[in-house]
Amino acid sequence: MEDQFQKIFEEIKADPMNQEYTKKGIDPLYYADADARILIVGQAPGRVAQDTQIVWNDKSGDRLRDWMGVSHDEFYHSGKIAVLPMDFYFPGKGKSGDLPPRKGFAEKWHPRLLEAMPNLKLTLLVGSYATKHYLHLKSSTKLTNVVHNYQDYLPQYFPLVHPSPRNQLWMSRNPWFEKEVLPDLKQRIDQFLR
Image (cartoon, rainbow, N blue to C red; front, side, top):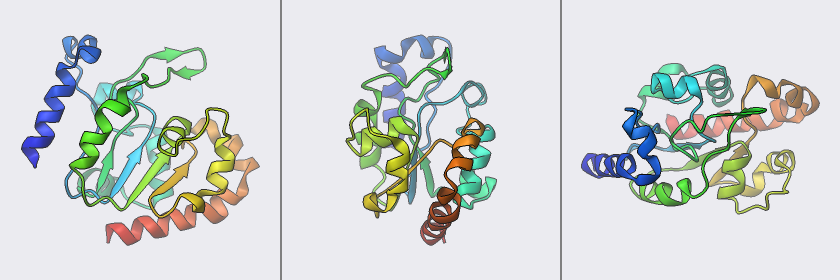
């Protein structure tokens, strides 16, 4: 199975779509393991994550681990948590934050990696790009409504807002998220990790 993961990794690096990164010595950033039980699908690596080659290596990652109820060690070293962003490379900075993931990237690479992870029990969809892609929702769909009705997508998918510190105002306006959604998320994560 490791050979299969390595083969896909090399193919991603060799893909003409990713040549500008490969030429700069930047590897695709994701984590896949045949034993993974939980998958996190987010937007794309940020600058810090790409520079350090560590997924969710920022304040958003700290908050995500807190939401999940997992330690730093469990998140990175248990082998039970996989991370497939919608793009495996930092897309650059835009006017109001990072640019969106490139179109067509997840469609091309996610199915092959998912096929190599047969033990997945739960997929966390973090933010609007992942949620709308995996749940086949219209671009006009409000993420708040999807997250509020998260139980409609269980047991396979668990939609979440992005854990960015910039979403603090959203958190204060939607107290149900911390009160109802996060305890359920923690319980499910614990069930699949233990």
